[in-house]
Length: 308
Image (tube, rainbow, N blue to C red; front, side, top):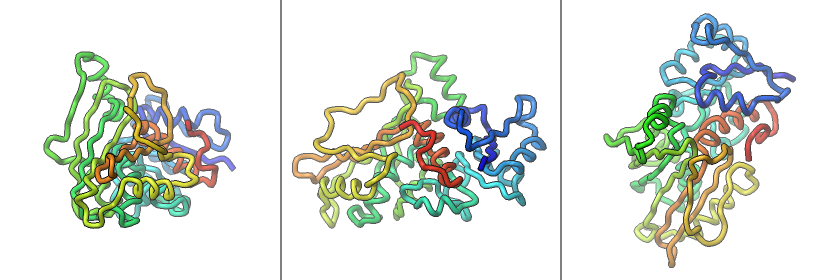
């Protein structure tokens, strides 16, 4: 069976990477609008309604418009924007956390954000296992390549080589906060400190924890063992074994990949820990996740077309 796919917003970074992953796959027929028609509402509506699955690579308001344009059709939707990540009626597209069956049967799937992907992969399983408290004041320190900020940020970094580092979200408000709180099952919003470096892609997300201050006094090894058990058999998420690495690097010209590595770095005694996720913001953090969800929704091997 051939599945008709329409990427609304195919000219953006996420859309281009999704097209790259779909190239040469006979299971899919890609519906494409030329440059003159890709922003035409009537043409988009027609393509959205003709598709078996539409993937939205759009700003939030445009994604909401696309959903309205597809109303009444049988089109299944994967939304890569942040418009529907905590919305009623939408399935959160993180199969390792939500379950493949829910995504396989969903009409509407919202792709996780890149930063929340790293945070939730570490925290959500540990909160569910009651190794970490749901009411802890979690802090997230994260750094990403500039491609996650869209065309404007890409242009800014690539035309201003003097920019060495950018931190933002300094009002302590960020669109990822509701997503991280909700899908980790937390009582409080997280304190989120995101930054950008002059590398095109790549991301490190870190949650430092003083385990000794928690009432149940968890140990770093317990956290590692729980994550290894939770992701046992996953071909996408891998838990690093053994001692903490000396360092973790993001390289300026790293190649795209769709997996994610999790590190549990504890001190001697195990009462302090740095939980760290390393991933590609355009891979498991965006386009790779969309392809993983698409595969599941179409009844295909989960990792088909992924760069692992």
